[in-house]
Length: 102
Image (cartoon, rainbow, N blue to C red):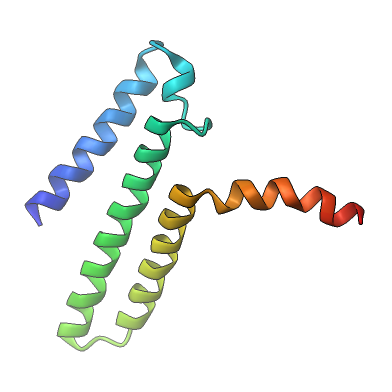
């Protein structure tokens, strides 16, 4: 658990530093589809997936009824992380206008 917390602090710290510095804003802008920003966004989503899965497993161990909900939420964040890496959302937004005009 300490490793997960340390990873969260490191990822958030990198984001804060990139926001506070104006060095090469195009590279560090989270709105851009660059290498650094994609890795940062994916790391945050993957970290959320790990934390939600940990919560789900602990809830299941304790026998609470909401463990499936936590696991479902972890699944959603895993899909979001995969989408961030694969860029499905970019392909969809490129294809959608032509599909609507047809």
